[in-house]
Length: 314
Ligand code: CP
Image 1 (cartoon, protein in one colour):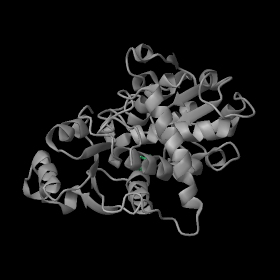
Image 2: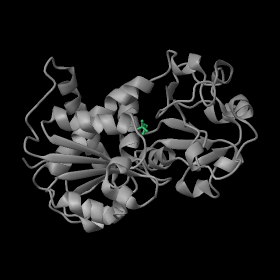
Image 3: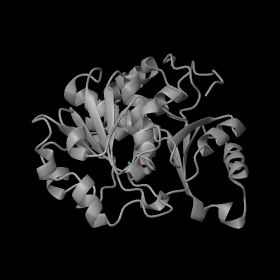
C-alpha cells in the first residue's frame, strides 16, 4: 500500500501545500462511499492502533476519529485527561511516551494549550494528528469544511467566504483561513474588534466590523462558536448584544446571495451566534460538515498509516 503521502504527522493546515490538501480531499471523497454501505467496514487498516488522547471535551471530533478508525478496521483506544495518570502528576510527555511503548500507530491529540501536538511529535515515533490545540489550529475541521464546500459548489478556487464571530480565540478560524486562502478562495472576517486579532489582514484576509457588509456577495458564511472557555475578560457587553450585532438571523441573511451556504463547526449556541431558523434552514450544511468529518478522518488515517510515508518531516 503506497499512497504517495510523504508526511508523518498532521499538525496544522499551515504546513500543508495546496497539492497535499487536494490529495486529502480526493481520498476523502473515495472514503465517503464506505459510510453509505450496509456493512460500513473495510479491512484497510487491520492491525493498526489509533489512540485518541483528548484533554478537552469533544463530541464531533473524538467520535468521528473513532468511527473513521473502526470503518477502516483499526483498533481504537480512547483516553481522557481525568481518567488517565495525568491526574496523579504524570507529565504530558511521559504519558505520550508510555502510550507509545504499547506501539500505537497514531496518537490523535486535543489540548487547550497551543503547540502540544507539535511537542508530542518530537517525542514519539508514531504519527501525531492535531485534533485542536488551544487557539492555534484545528486542521481536520478545516479539511472537512473544504470538502463540504467542494462537494456543494464544485470548486473552492475563486469563491468568497466570510468567517464571522470570535475569530481571535478560534482555532477553526485560523485553520480555515490557511485552508481557503491556499486553495484560492478569498476570505473575509467579521466580528467585534475585540475578537479580531490585530493585523489579521497579514493572513491575507479582509476585516469587517459589520456582519451585514461582510456577508454581502459571499458564497459561504461560516459562523463561529463563541469560545467562552478561552476568553479571559469581557470582550462584549452581553450575549444579547452580541446576538443582535453579530448573530446570523433571517434579517441579516437578506444581505446574502440567494445561493449562499451557511456553515458552523459546532457545537452551536442557538440564538447567540446563529438563529435556529438559520441553523436548521435550507442554506445550512452543518450536518453535512459532520458527515464529512468521518470521511476526512478516514482519509487521513489511511494516508498517514500507508506505506511510503516514512519521511520524518512533520
Ligand atoms: N467542531 C468540533 O471540534 O466539535 P467538537 O468539539 O464536538 O469536537
